[in-house]
Image (cartoon, rainbow, N blue to C red; front, side, top):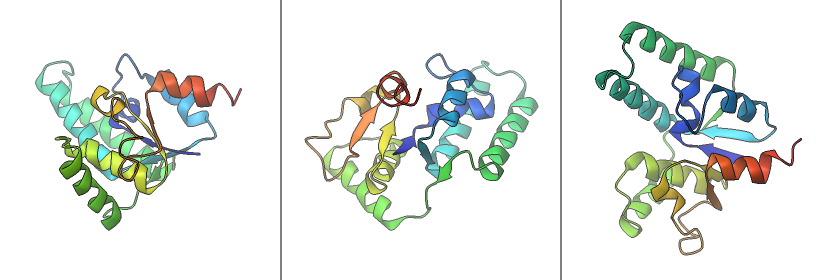
Length: 162
């Protein structure tokens, strides 16, 4: 089985935790036998999240945050904790454009991860309510086989591993 991860699920690598996905959850995910795929685009979005948190004052130590982010990039690159999707990928690009035109999703990063999951025949793991509401039955030619959040994923797939 292959899953494509939304940005939420890589943030703990950069020392950024949110309520729905923390470092302990990342450890569970990384220890699972399920293959994990990351689009290079979400690395950009993760940096955007970091700067947003700095701007809002949630993160106060800029230098430490940047160093944590860089350390996380090195972990992703050197430890092979995730498989990285090909970039550029013309097939992903075409499906992303079709998603924009057909479904009208405004967020480019959301469209890219949807298209990536579709092209790689993977489940999309996301906490984004707009994506979770999409009907994979209505748009089977554009959307991945399944779109689910961490809670659903743990219950359906990770409970089988123990």
